[in-house]
Length: 139
Image 1 (cartoon, helix red, strand yellow):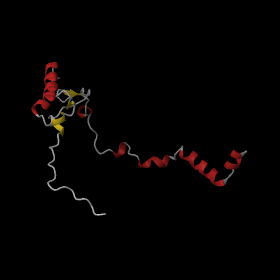
Image 2 (cartoon, rainbow, N blue to C red):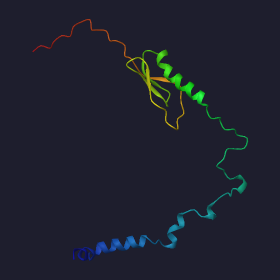
Image 3 (cartoon, one colour):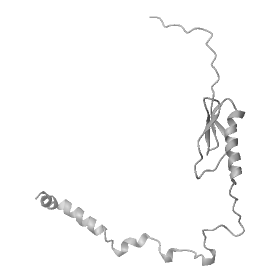
Image 4 (cartoon, one colour):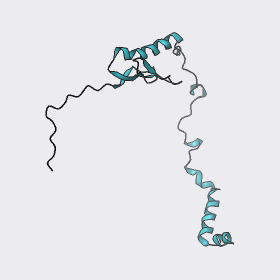
């Protein structure tokens, strides 16, 4: 009963009719889309882009397990060379100084390109105490 009263309103009927008409556009409505006549140049099939590497291009060799281990150890050893650094990383492996002084490092992600190892957080230098004691505000 309520639905029929709702649908009986003229504005609702006009909106529904417009939505139904929008589902089946008139043939002239697609005129703004590019068609075969709008293409300036046709690329010959032999010059089309391919998914493979270019001719003569060589793919970089995959790193060996020994190279990966050397990279991991160099990131871990960064803390020994920089004792003021508390956390460091190369964009793939992040390490921080553990309680016992040994580095604690995270595993690298599967798709990672390492950068130069850099210090991410260092020890703050000890602040010098103020020479003058702080004055209390007058009450």
